[in-house]
Image 1 (tube, helix red, strand yellow):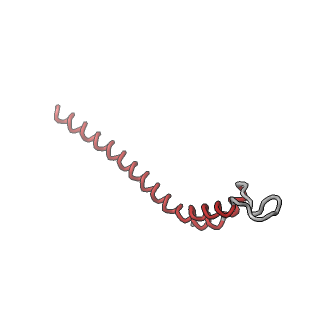
Image 2 (cartoon, helix red, strand yellow):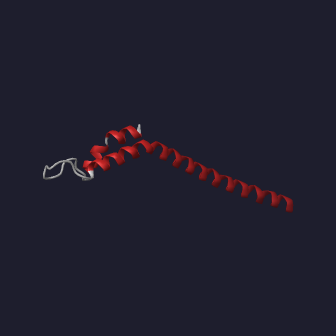
Image 3 (tube, helix red, strand yellow):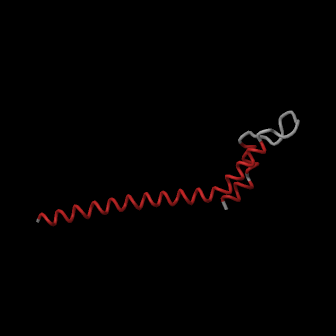
Length: 84
């Protein structure tokens, strides 16, 4: 869904950012418009994969953090019970 929205709205986003399809003098297409449009459309196709990888990385960091907290808590409990 996100990729479709970005792909379809790429030309609107470019005009919002100041890259016009037609130059101010009306002499034809802007030199930056077509490469910028191609770039946004290619990025739109890769956006879902990037979001997926980011989500997996954040989940892995969160899981590792939780495991480190729980493992350190259990080791301190076991050492205190051994001292008694």
